[in-house]
Image 1 (cartoon, protein in one colour):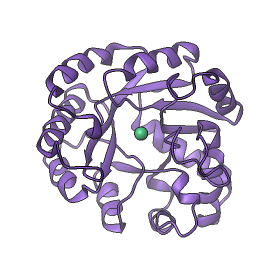
Image 2: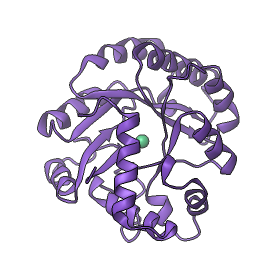
Image 3: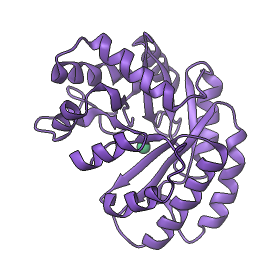
Image 4: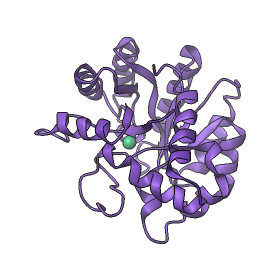
Length: 258
Ligand SMILES: [Zn+2]
């Protein structure tokens, strides 16, 4: 495939109040033709619907409750979210997982919510975008309970080590590589070299984590080629090879994308 896929982004009007259209247009002009917007809470489906309505050929979405957004009212939120799998251009479940980086206040609830949404993915045969932060040792045993063989997805913003990367490869999960790989001394560079292109997909996580030389500014999906360029340098292959292989991986996982 001769275009890029941004497998994880948050191009919502909320973050780009004045220039959402031009941000998406710039991405398409940079040959990032498919962009997957991750869901985080019950407000996101409307924001995704808006962006997908503007660019139906380019914008796809996921439905999910982010672990850091889990509160006491999670049952109501999940009930509401589940209705949105019928929305236009929804292609998976995410971003879901466990995040014990900021706090563990809702540790137990995070696990319940994570499992509930894994059940959805199994029932609906949909791929996952997983957000796991400071919680690999808790998340992997949970995922191991779901050995259906059909569960697939991406370890978004991969922050694990070699062992976790190997676990991913053996269990049908790709690792999501974004702007962090362009940062000096990032340990992700070593992971990319060891993993190789067979198990990598590209992502920006825009508006966060802009790659070098835009580090510290608002990220956008049009920066995907900078990430691909860095991976190409690390692996000593042409950027085109990185584009073709990562797009093939992304479309295999998010198979509802047309
Ligand atoms: Zn995200």
